[in-house]
Image 1 (cartoon, rainbow, N blue to C red):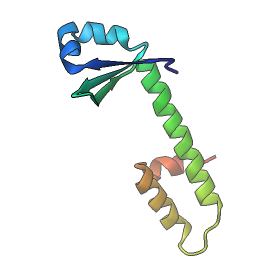
Image 2: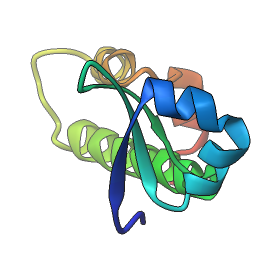
Image 3: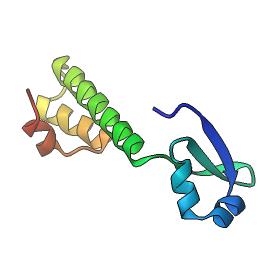
Length: 98
């Protein structure tokens, strides 16, 4: 994971260009406008790791939720609600069940 962060005004990022921003991706770079964060530049490997972490957590949440056996609604409806909330496909989740 990223160990440090730098803040860079949009004007400086614009002057330095994309190659410079790509070089800074080893350090989380927050591009700002009027001192407010507008974008974050991270290495592609870091982004991949973060996306995988989100998927893993979503899988765990779904497994815990479905495994609780809530009686108020049918299991298929609970799964659909959880998937909708997490932005996942019900078919993809069902195909990945252990």
